Image 1: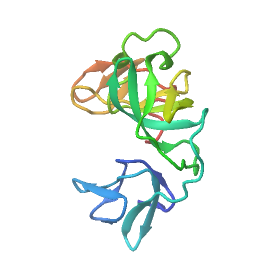
Image 2: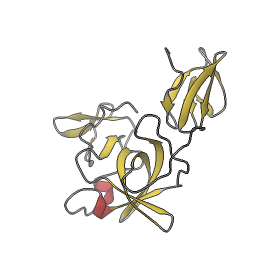
Image 3: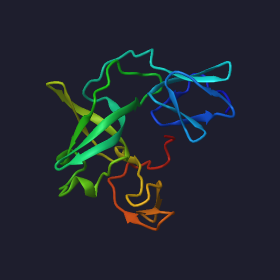
Image 4: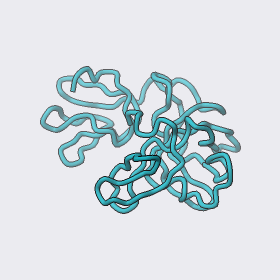
Length: 188
């Protein structure tokens, strides 16, 4: 892995193998891969990988763009855990347990079931619409917001966008999501 110093990583992101590096603070091993256990800055010293959460500078506010993972869907909302923050070296001082995405804020138009648009484990780009009594509410309305990476509900493999539909290359399952305009073109 070339020039990894200063790279922003998200929880679960693969950073190298145990053959190459020794796992350090803010990491865990899955199989032979060393993965990040936190959102932060990757550093490598003496062949040891660690993730640092220092440089947490700004606070969350309305209009901020966040990346998150869908943790739960309880009609009519989805709970989304915030991952790293969009915008290079911008970091937020406090990350909430979960943000709330209401069905009415998923897309323009009527959403009957949240599960028709989002599934647990999907990675989404959202915009903070409001912060009310400690609850952060987000929206995926707009072409640039929505699912960036989706996983098959049957086998958990990443879904590919083929001819306007999501399809699993492993089991052949076809699914729908509220996709961001740059689905699967963003490195996550």
